[in-house]
Length: 481
Image (cartoon, rainbow, N blue to C red; front, top):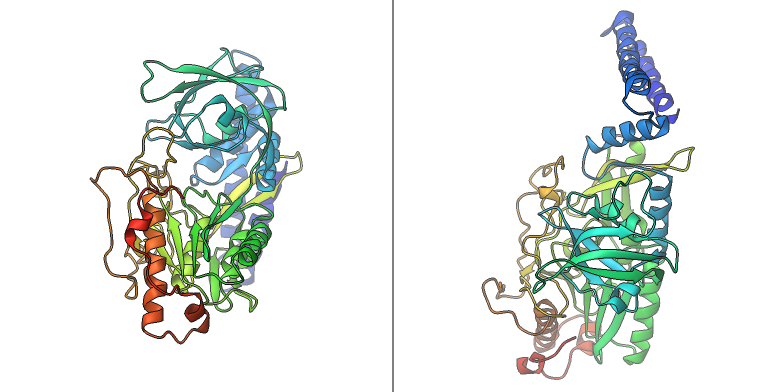
């Protein structure tokens, strides 16, 4: 079995280290006692397994028992370490490729334990069926439920988010029913949906107006950096070769692959540190630096973040903020400052293990704290079909059981002395019809480029990119970017 073998290897190496210094600090008896203690722990597990196998009221699947024990062991470590059975491991690999068979919805865990729809993905079965942001999925009723189900539908209350994803995915053409509770519904209503191929474009990019770019990254998949570069270059050509502002939207981006986050940040940096990691093992202590082919200072830039901005997306936001390449605008981020390594196991399953903490270029750990925006703009809740960006009660890293606490002085917000004056908070105001955070970002960019021109910036790219005159604020009213 892989687990005991790995543990014994560790014990052997540790004992060898002790024996080297045995003449000074430790006796051979102490080393032998350590080995005996490890065998005693394995003996405890074997004894419990034997008792369950022989005496439980029903015959049990031994493989299921062992996997359950491994799963419980890892869940006791931290919220992000877990055992992935072969199906879950395969699905995780599918996620990074950006194409799967399923419904096409982004989901999150609510504080009350149920599953909530963040947003349906355009053009997918979920969108065609009429699912909306903020819909509450209270039960899942697959056509072919797992063998251990004793009822056709199962409540999502307390259900692991990963398990919910697995249940809602399935072969193209198969049908699933979910029970949905929505504001205005007296009781949950069934939505019967036929699964289809869902292709998730990790990057969306468009011109808000000539020279002003908006790009949203939904998650960091295998080709995210390449897709971003390709789409930005296409918009540059369309915009006459010059940008005078760039909005990078990382809101509700749950993260993904570390190497893609590094490449995305590197797109706007030409020098310096992007992120570094620190773990117990030497191989987990790494530095990732920008290359010289980045965009450099050039045009001004604003990064949008919120409570759903997590992990890899926080790495990008933190790097651009610390390197003073961009202003960060929005709400404090999720606060996941740990790195998980996925180890494939012999039977096709996987071990997802927290192996390091990452730090921004300024040496900040954002664990359980998050990225503090330079300009705080809370997005009010929006009703109807408007995109949902405000979740004042959204779960963050600090709300998860067993999370690592803040590291060092990470709890202290990072000051930014060169941010535009007039921090804004919309808390308690009536919700406007537009995306307020995006509108504020556009306003900041236009003011920024105008004042750079007024004071005679030494940066030729900024001089060339700045508009001739500021556009009136009224031009933002009534727009839905």
